[in-house]
Length: 85
Image (cartoon, rainbow, N blue to C red; front, side, top):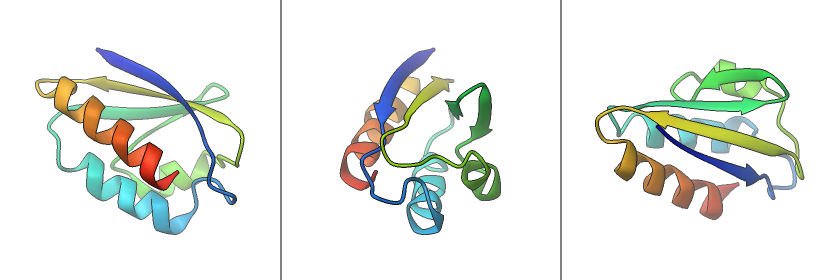
C-alpha cells in the first residue's frame, strides 16, 4: 500500500471539474485509490462520492493506493494533485 497526504491549494477545493479529471486519472490504473478527509473516504473513481467529501482549499486529504500498479498510480495521482489541486 502507498499513501500520501496533500494540502488542497485550489481556491474552491475539489469541485466538479477537477473531480471529473481525477476520476479519469484514477481509472487509468488497476489499483484502488481512496481519498480520505476527516474520517470520510471515497474511491477516486466515483465522482459524486468525491464531491461529497466537501474538500475545501487548505484542507489536507489522505490518498491511499493499493493494487498491482500502486507505484505508478501513486506517482501519477500525486502529479495530478500537484498540477490540478
